[in-house]
Each structure stands twice: as structure tokens, then as C-alpha cells.
Length: 393
Ligand SMILES: Cc1ncc(COP(=O)(O)O)c(C=O)c1O
Image 1 (cartoon, rainbow, N blue to C red):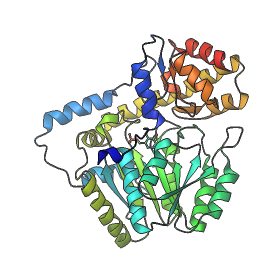
Image 2 (cartoon, rainbow, N blue to C red; image 1 turned 180 degrees about the vertical axis):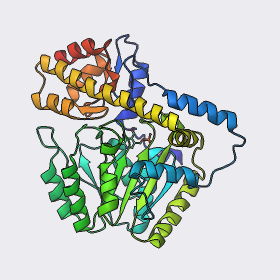
Image 3 (tube, protein in one colour; image 1 turned 90 degrees about the vertical axis):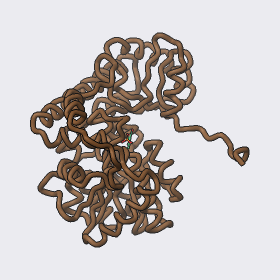
Image 4 (tube, protein in one colour; image 1 turned 90 degrees about the horizontal axis):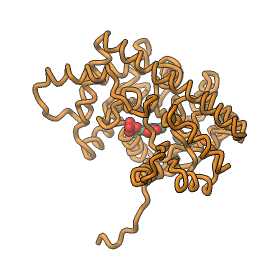
């Protein structure tokens, strides 16, 4: 029966990394995969993580299964971190998930159970996996423009799109460090967008994959706290891949905000049924590391300062990259967006031919939509990047 299947291409994030790995060009640069890299091109294991894992290994006595929801005290500690202790109340419930990706998948499955007619709205340009996750779960996906032609946040488009959505539709919003644009929403933008969701009855799904790497925890998590104070319901999907450097340990959390405890309990009974069917028990190791870091004051302040180092490097690098591109006469608006944006990503607005030339001739790997991971650039490769881009524009 396998002969009935046609080949399906994995998204260009995975594809670009495979091409990069196979390339023998000594100057090749990987700007495709979305991981933080330091000035030496390394994706570091933070010192706080190294210490926490040593402590954990020294005290670990068993490796039995966790319950599908993970470990309750770890879930509440994480919930306190992201919502702030003040706001982290009985209106929210949180479970651990294998990375943010599984949190998104569980969200999709829940929405499918709730109302298979729901449309999931995604701002374009979009993170590639959002579409796959929601569509492959049997939900309808729709798009609206989230940036204008000058690469800025397109607030009017958000508001108009939401006003036209149906009650019980859902909208996927990224809390900070937007993937793939890097475009940042101001607090006042969040008020308008989220208030409109509340007015129309649209469910916000906040994907918080990069918190800490934009403008610090408090700013990056602002929409979550605004939601708890002002909206009846929302879903928050968090990841500890980038901000804790725990990528392959697969640590994420799924939080649901609702008005009644009974509704939340019912919601989680369905979510946990899907978790049970998909993976039964979330990976424990990374969750213990996160818990140790958040519970031990010395580790927590070490992690916060390591987070600051990553964030500051990204901000400085964005300015350097914008500068380098301005030098070669690159699109002025794209340069400003790189400088003003936050996080790992920027869109260069290159066409398919230019992207192919960069890969095939120069060994510079970016996504098909010309998204680059700024953190892949450093003092050793930025001149090569500059001359390569200059030769394709
Ligand atoms: C926007 C966004 N959401 C979610 C994720 C999922 O991350 P993970 O599954 O590693 O937690 C990523 C990872 O790149 C992402 O960029």
C-alpha cells in the first residue's frame, strides 16, 4: 500500500539544512536553521544549564514515566514565570509539552474537537510550520497581511482582518521576535489587536517561542499578561528551545486561559487524551533543568544574564547587518526593518533566482522565502555574506 503515497517535500527549514550539510564549499554559511549562535558560530549550552544538568544527574533516582501533563509543580513554576506571579491565577492552567511544536499540535487537535469549522488565521509572512500543524490537523487556515510593503507592522490589516473573522475562529500571534519577519508589535498595538479579538470572539493563540530574546522577559511576555487581565480566553504555547538553549531536549508548555475552572478542566481532559495518544509522557530531562534554573536564585540570575548576552548580541548584530546591507545599496526599508526588528530573523525580500544563486554559487543557505537567521553571521563570515549578497542584487 505504500506505493499509493507520493513524495512530500519537508518545509524549506529542514530542506535548507540538508542542502547546507551536503555542500562542500568551505565558505558555506547556514542562515536557514532557526537556532541562536554566538560570535564563534556555536549554539552554546548556557552555563546555567550545564550546572543544572550536573545537579539533576547527581540527584536523579529513577526514570519512570511522567504523567501526560508533566510535573505539576514545574508547570506552575513555569506559569508563574511567563504570566508573572501577580497574574498567574486560577484562570490559567498549564501542562508541559515536548517543545512548542507539540503545544501547537495539541492546540490544533483541541480546536478540531471543539469546532471543526473553525478557521485558524495566520499573519503573512508566516512561520512555515504553523500552516502544516493546523492544516494537517484538519483545520481551515486563512491568511492576512501582518506587514506592509515597507516591512513594518501592518496594524490596520490586523484589525480589519479580525473584524471580519467569525466568532470562535482563532488567530495565531507571535509574542515577540516574529518568525520570519522580526517585526515587533508595540504595547499599544497589542491592546488594539487583542481588544478586537475580545470584541469579535476570536481566540488568540499566542506562540511564545523566543521570549527573553527580544526586549527582555517583561516586554516579550507583555501580551500574555494583558490577556490574563483583559480577555476571557486564550491559548499560550511556550518554548524553552531558544531561550534556555535546550532545543533537542524538547521542553515546551501549553497554557489555557479561561473564565471557569470547570471549562479549563474539561479542556485539559481533551488535551491530555491527545497527549496520551501521541506521546503519553513528555520528556523529563529538560523540564527538570528548567525547574532547577527557575527555582535556584543563583542559577536564575545566571540564566537571566546569559539571556541578556544573547539578546544584546542579536540587537547589535541586527544593526551591523543593516549597516553592511546599506553599504551595498540594499533595499532601504528592509534594512530599517532588520535594525528595528528583534530576535533571530529577517526577510531579505530576494526572489527565487537570487536565493538559488546564493545557495548554489556562494554556499549561503537561507529559506526559500529569503528568511535569514541573523545569528548565523559573525566577524568571520559577514564580509563574505556582504559580497555574496552584492553579487546577486
Ligand atoms: C514561531 C515558532 N513557534 C514554535 C517553534 C517551536 O519550537 P520548539 O518545538 O523547538 O519548542 C518555533 C521553532 O523554531 C518557532 O520559530
